[in-house]
Image (cartoon, rainbow, N blue to C red):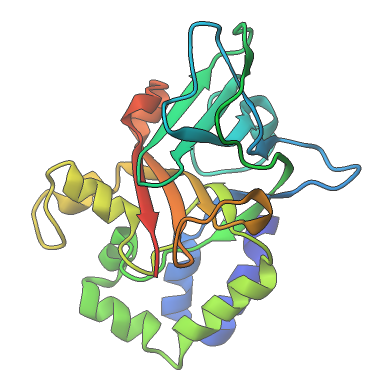
Length: 262
């Protein structure tokens, strides 16, 4: 068994009936957890700071750099999405509002610093591979258990499992839940469901919904981080999703941005 899956699998097997547990373990996905780098850690990117962009490109109006990621270094970690082999990904967010942009710079791109009117404090990031699991009504979870009521009956209503797995996550992965890939949080609606609906596939029960939802993956999730002065509102998460085919084509203009708060 892969190291990232081992502790999660043991926890789930302890808390749930065997058949239910094995379904959840099968659905688990690896994500790259981004955390504050300390001295001696390998950096894979940074939160905030001054964006570096081609001389012909400006920081998007009204936005600030949220994250810069080194794709070559990220590729040293197991993850469930096909990231570019090299180059740099830059994620920008609006300071007040819900707009966001992603810029991909292939390796060797000439860049210059592009100061913005406001910049988040710069904080280096390191990485590790961790287990993530489907929450709430994640489409793959609903499919695995045959419907929304069946999912809640088998998983979330079983012996306070929802509370148990939430506590497990907090203990296993302390600090802001920044990550690349894997399942993003879904305490409201899963980003896959929101993106599928926005693409015109309807909602749970519509014929094309699950097929469309299955095409969407989490590119980046950012939690609120007071050290980086990133407050999305009411404990919210900023989530960038993208269709797998758009990711393969490196078409980052097709990302779907979702702010999910309590």
